[in-house]
Length: 222
Image (cartoon, rainbow, N blue to C red; front, side, top):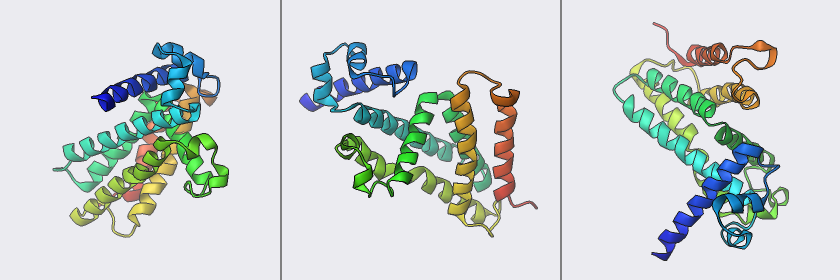
């Protein structure tokens, strides 16, 4: 019962942190503002989260969990379709997930940049005390590769059913699609709700171009 109550309290704090991060950004957010939003004292907040970094990682973990759940749901929905159709649904889902969740997309981009710059978290000297001590950082490391593995799984299924070309490396294709999507995601993160950001670009057309590029990369044309 005590663990359940603590978990409920912790989730409430994470939700409050999300609202503050979304409103004023991670860099500008202060722990006292998060405590006030959660309706608790700063002392109580620090009893649950020792640093703002740990809170941000908790939000990132929530984001990645939600994305993975959506991947599984989409794969199940497309199990009677070809591997190619399932792959395209996954890639489209990833882009639209980031479109609909600016905070989550920024958190995920920040996390993967952190991973790259710290040798996948192995270089302890490049990690702050807040990150090293964060249980959420370790939780993220446990599941960080799952979205890629699920995409690879569906590409291999497409190779078997003849809908995806067999002369590509499944992980390389996945990472290429991921890299192509990241540029678009950075644009929409910077644009916010503005549908025509830098150079008056139509984001919907840009998204369709990204998806067409992925389709041309993996599709076996008969």
